[in-house]
Amino acid sequence: MKIDIIIAYVQRYEFGHERDFVPPITGIHLAAITPAEHDVRVFHQQIDKLDYETDADVIAISFFSGFAVAAYNLAVEFKKRGKLVVAGGPHVTYCQEEALTYFDAIVTGEAENVWPALLQDIEYGQLQPIYAGSPCDMTNLPTPRYDLLPNRFFIKKVIQATRGCPFSCSFCTVPSLNPGFRLRPVEDVVRDASYDQFPHWWQRKIVWFWDDNLTIKRPYIRQLLTEMVPLKKWWLTQASMDIAKDPELLDLMKASGCIGVFLGIESFGVESLADANKKQNKIANYKEAVKAIRKRGIAVMAGFIAGFDHDDEQSIINMADQLMEIGIDVPFLSIMTPFRGTPIYTKLEMEGRMLPERSWNFYNGYNVAFKPKKITQTQLLEAHRALWKKSFSPQYSFKRILRGAFTLRLGAFLMSFFMNSFYSLKRVRKNYPIDMSKRVDFIKLTQPLKTAERKVA
Ligand code: B12
Ligand code: SF4
Image 1 (tube, helix red, strand yellow):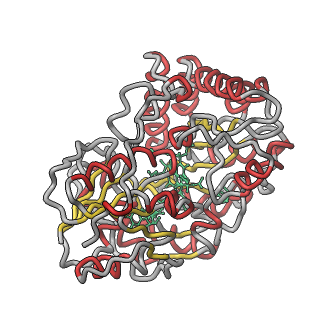
Image 2: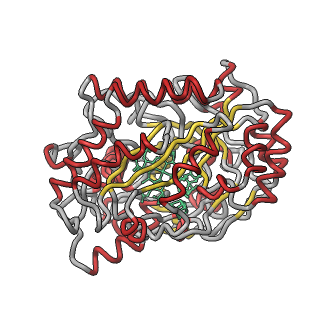
């Protein structure tokens, strides 16, 4: 069969985000675990033009909640043309009934154990509506199909070495989506990190780990990094702040080529951190932790969330100065989003604070889908936009770049330079995150197909 895998996307900025820096691993991983007798192609809606007249037999769509409306629209279009459309990913896992209105079948949870069976059922005309995936054992996973990525992605070597996370932050679906903490054999990860069939040196050089929390199992990460030293790569990952208290690990990270670490700092408020159930973060240690990582020339990227129950407008805007003060190189600024499957969603739903009239377009990390406690929805949105504008003002962006020029290793500096310039340019050109409440017409959902009209092979 011919299979088109599509990663759905909705523009999150007012204009011009049609190129992407680094691709998702989802599509090229799914392609790699697709049995070899099928022809597979991968498309990223963010950068690829989609062809509704494709000759594919099966359309397989992956999406986050914020991109669900786009994914459903795609399903409707492809089904109008008689295609069989299936889907998977975090959104369908938690919104199965809704997803089945649009798709012929869905995969919930992890796909490795059920994807080949689904494809076989299509061939035998026995497609079931739901394929319940289970946590996969991470041995023998193939190298992602990097060859299927378009060259427009600046970085291409995305890898997953581990799955899951032992923490349980209130806003995160990882503990229920990828239960447990599982590791791929080090030799498999090293094999993927050594992949070099890319045209540009930086695509061969840079490895981006799309893990939830790569460093948590110390013996594993030490072995992996020791084996990565001879590869002479530049690599980046997401990790917990506790790495800062492990100087040996930090030294090994430096020796193996680490250029960037993403920390989920989330907030500077003690009570907001309690709202986040982020017990592992200690505000008093932020500055020291960032310093310890940067001392090795590694850039610190960090995520901050606006909209916890104890946040108000001022505490949100203040984060722009606070993140500068602790030495962050690249900030990522989100609005708290109550995804299905998270403790925060359950709490807000019980308290009657969800805003059901707000479509999935509001779940892209830059919009408000619930009633905040201390401020109004509009105040939260505006405070976040003020935080975003201040953080990416030319002065602050330039200060971060300059700071990096004197302290970071080359790869880390280039990454910080690129990202800060990119967001600062958006700020200068007034290309802000989209305010969906003013753009309610933005990608309307076309009429769902009636179940009877659904064509299953
Ligand atoms: C890497 C990552 C990123 C990367 C890459 C983004 C990307 N588009 O892939 C970056 C840092 C850019 C990112 C950004 C964001 N992310 Co993110 N991210 C992740 C993370 C940590 C890992 C995802 C991953 O690559 N896993 C490895 C691949 C192989 O597995 P997978 O994608 O889960 O797919 C498996 C199954 O889901 C299934 N599957 C998936 N799709 C399909 C489709 C079909 C047809 C089938 C059969 C199966 C299938 O099969 C795969 C194999 O088992 C997850 C956490 C997690 N554990 O899932 C969050 C996560 C996916 N992100 C999330 C969010 C919210 C975001 C942001 C909106 C955050 C923000 N505030 O800005 C942005 C969106 C940006 C964007 N443009 O897409 C949420 C999504 C929740 C939801 N319900 O939508 C997650 C779950 C984390 C959380 N908070 O709970 N993210
Ligand atoms: S530490 Fe990160 S991945 Fe783990 S539960 Fe918290 S937000 Fe999710």
